[in-house]
Image 1: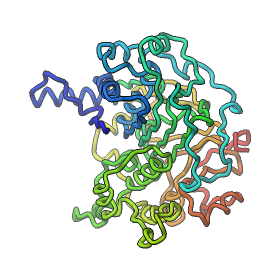
Image 2: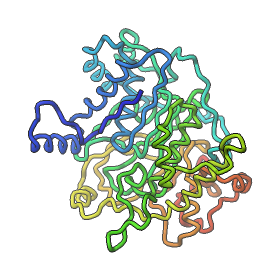
Image 3: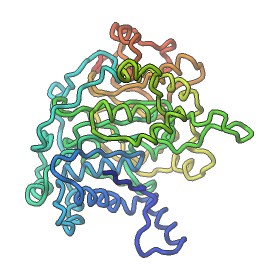
Length: 448
């Protein structure tokens, strides 16, 4: 069963029937996330009314929709899922969730206690990916962080205790509301999410789009499978929305080839790798294959008894090599609002290298993002399509800066071809000009 919500900036509240009234409501929602609660509780209500014991819950979103998706998962973790007959409790449940304490209120456990136990080599490929975490038979949440507040009492008294099996998001913003940023508990880390995947933008540089990355210090690797991958592109190049690349005559010579195709293909593979049970529409898949957005199966796949997973990744990488050539979308454009916000002291959430949350009013001034690593085993990856592009183009240098890396340490690589794995494991980072990745070296960093 599928539920879709348009998202923040698109909500049409009942009672506003005029075009002007609806437009004002949409802009208010976009500027200050006026109806954030409505977006979250609408999704929550759908789950209340449709969930049956044993169901698998998967949630997806992009940008502020990704924030809403993670907020919905956060509400499920914090106050549980109310029974379908208890609709009147939803507004109160949301208020309880909004006041809940999360990992930002307590110190994390030691790194040794939470460091992932999987392969520590600087590589990960789709065909050598982690196995999904073992099921606990649905008898409770992944609960290593105790909430000593009213949320836990509400959950015990009124709600079902359920997990969220899969959350797949594209470039989550750290808060919603362009002028009045708002955030919620259990966004950066959520003990009730079993599998988390996020595609992130290396080249976004707007202060209003600071990303919300997973707090890897809290991950319970025996029960949670987490991966964040950085791709070439700005915000709309990752989750979609950027127009096709055009020439001076306004023509689109590259057709459907776009940067956003790369993280889309990656996310779809994650859905299958993680055994979510999600079934895709065969006709839609065929249309995407014909448009070279999804990889086509090799012609002899039927003869050989199916589509070998390694070959699927290789076919996908071939499409990546074409799509990664597309031009970055200019997120600023001629919009004076975005330009002004970069130099205006608007409050925005951020984190330092120790992942401590804070609010800042320091203007962003179009600075690139910072990628922080707190442990050498943090599942933070650079996508292989970025490496290929860096090696073939002299002019490109990602805007993001990498922090927490030692003198001989490099980011881990996602979607690596089989013939590259041995070289990477031996410490050979496959980048010809290593100055193109801006890495802040630290002799005391976790990587050595």
